[in-house]
Every structure is written in structure tokens, then in C-alpha cells.
Length: 233
Ligand code: E4P
Image (cartoon, rainbow, N blue to C red; front, side, top):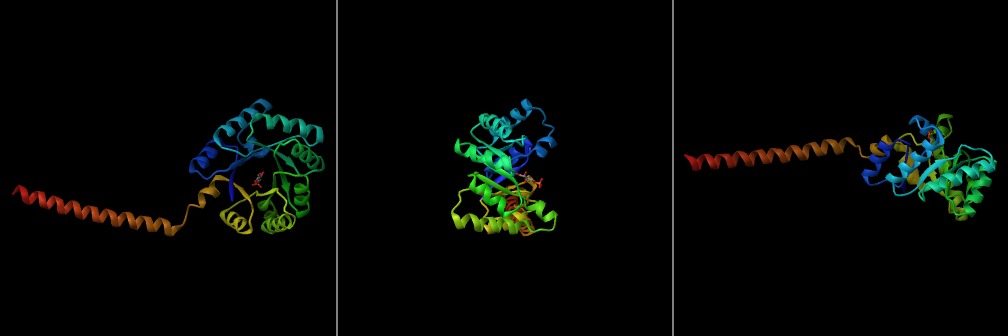
């Protein structure tokens, strides 16, 4: 399973990258706004900075919602770096644009996907990634994980190459369930990736190992001190 980090914060991206398990980054206009990145030049420079940190797969979302606008913006984003994946919303012109980008070898991520039908269209248009939003479905009392399972089944039935990128992940249970279902990628905030490290038995186990080691070392040092003392007197 690939791990992407869902943020536009350069420090968080670097921290996840330094852990050695990061395969990519997803951003969206809200995450860019959170970092105060506004204006075309600053947005382009920020994507470039992200591409300098990670090895591949940087999703950069278009703002345009009409076909020509999406194509123009997507091509500009794709020119920033080969690592860029153009993120396009699940709307009519978005699907058309994904088809065109795919025919021109530009990788795409179809975002704001909330139903199996939308995921089917995404695959038929040839997107590299489909982004079903688990957490936002949970927020309206629908099980977001069910959608991941439905998409997995549909894609496997027909051998679609589009990778399932589970998005809007809120906690480690989402992530683990996605891995069980067989999502190809999970994008999550840094705290979810870091939370995978944690288990109370790991903490208490390590504490005991270190305490036992220290006790033995102290005993050895005391014995050594005693021998030195005997030699002297
Ligand atoms: C990523 O591609 C999505 O934009 C993101 O996961 C949405 O997450 P949210 O529902 O927490 O805003």
C-alpha cells in the first residue's frame, strides 16, 4: 500500500518523508489556503518546493471547472515537474479533461468521489487515481469504507488500472481497514501516519528493556568499582 501525506505544509511533508515511508503528497485548495499560499506564482513555487522534498506523486488541484480552463491549468501544473499529478474534480468537464490528459500522458487524480458510479466513470476516463472521501461520508452517517470495498470489487471485475486513493482519512482505523480492503493508496494527515507507531505495550516493553539493561550495567559498574577498591587497599 502506498502512503501519501494529505497536507501542503512543507515541514510535515519533510517529517513524513524522513520517516522513509512516504510515496507521495495530496493537496487541495483548502490545504493550500491553510498554509496561506495564494496567487498563481506562489502556488506554483509551493508545488515546486513540495516536489523537491518527495520522490513522486504530488497531487496539485485545478481551480477551473470548465473543460478549457481545466486543460490550461492542468498543463501548467504538469509542467512544474514530472512528479505532478493533476487533480481534477468529479464533474462533467472534469471527466472529459481526465480523458484528454490521459491521452496526452498526463497523470490525473479524480477528486471528490462519493459513489461507485463516479468511481466507474473515473476509471473509464483513464485516471491514474480515484479519490473516494471516507471521512466526509462518515460525517453524513454513511460508511465511507463500504465505498472503498465497492470500488475495489468493481475495479477488480474489469481489471481497471486506476488506483484507489483512499482520502479524507481521519484516524488509524480508517487506514488499517483500507489496507484490509485493498485500497492501493491512503492519503492521511501526519498525525495518522505517526499514530501507527504507537502501542502502549511497545512503550511499556521498551521502558522495561531499558530499565533491565541499566540495572545490569549499574551492577557491573559496582562490581568493577569494588575490584578497583580491593586492588588499591
Ligand atoms: C485529498 O486528496 C482530499 O482532498 C482530502 O483527503 C480531503 O480531506 P478532508 O475531508 O479531511 O478535508
